[in-house]
Amino acid sequence: MIKTILPALVLGLTAIASTALPAAPVHSEDQKAEDQKPEQIHVRGSIVSYSGSALKVKTREGETVDVTLADGWKLASVANAAVTDIKPGDFVGIASLPSAGGGDGALEVLIFPPAMKGAGEGSYGWDLKPNSSMTNATVADAVKGVDGRTVTVSYHGKEKKIAIPDGTPVVTIAPASNDDLVPGAVVFIPAEKAASGALAHQVLVGKNGVVPPM
Image: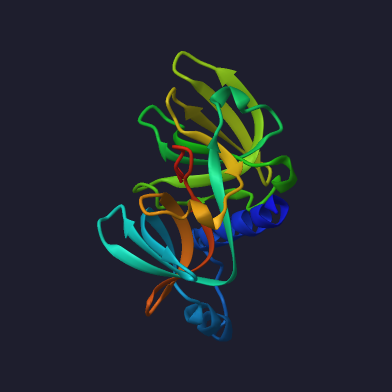
């Protein structure tokens, strides 16, 4: 089951995230099609209730959002990993912020399963915090420093150095079931903005004390 969940979930996340990338000039017909696409949003918060295809979430901003689960929606969770698990050749997703001293500092790290290497490769704007970015890339090297580690990641022929301070959340993707969608469970939901609230094809839920950090 996890083999069917993971690709759909992560490709969905990266497809949504990639909408933050600058677009090349388009013809008017293409622009009209682009304008007709639903607005993409990320819902972060705690479950208030779940029933059938309806999920009610209290967001981190304090509002309550009704999420409609699309036909065939997918569910997964996150499990703890360690910064020492990050090895050269691994494919990772790292949310980060520019550091005062130069380079980027990680806010969280997702270690992708090997079968998903290359999913959503690139670096683009992210909305975890103001001015944050998300980089999906292959680890070229990981060097232990005074405070955590610094990894060099590569994507599309480019390289980026990101410091991972001690205490930074590091997770990987794990299985989940509908029984995990209980009140209070923390979720991260990439969704489309709809008149009724939000429409989602994927849900990432926290379990066993581990919450989605992205």
